[in-house]
Length: 245
Image 1 (tube, rainbow, N blue to C red):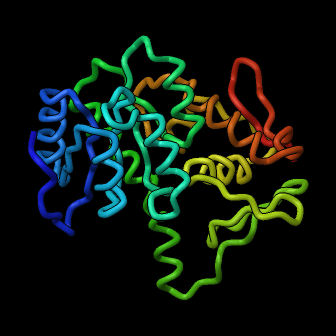
Image 2 (cartoon, rainbow, N blue to C red):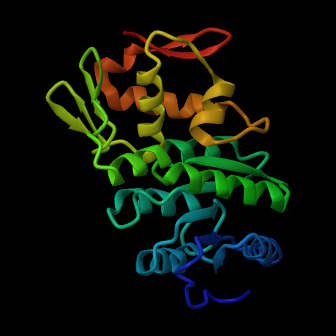
């Protein structure tokens, strides 16, 4: 397996943390064909060192790793300010549902179940990068000197889209990028039910059929962070979710 090469600063970088050499090589090949720079790590402990020294744009993380398992690696990355905002896509086997859910609870953006096609992985990585970039409208507005977007409020929730800050009552609450986008989306559509498919398309950028438990897990984690205000995010049976005015 090749060691991480010198970075190309013009290309988004993906860290592939996978101990199965053949699979890692396939992922590296397809990512580089799609225009990414791919760093490959076969162990969790060496990956941690590499990710801290040279944070990538996205991490593809297998859970079963020597040295340091994937769940512990994800936990450490999300607690470290240098790496907390790096999107993580967890690679799991079909029978690893519990680990998959734990990975999402730790802050992973999503998961991809093995076996998967390299094309699916590339599409997921591109979707993650689109989410990580500020909207073109916001960039254009800032360049034109337009006033910042107004805060969004509901009950004790106050969200600052430009400053990427959330206050619950008088307390500032830290959200992951995906949690922030999810709450922002629901606040903009207060009182209106949003289907899981719509949330997957607008928040995660997925047009294909993706397991909706991704949405459920992130909603559950968001509610917990919002405390008593978490009850404002209502489940609409058979549809999805709605944020109460």
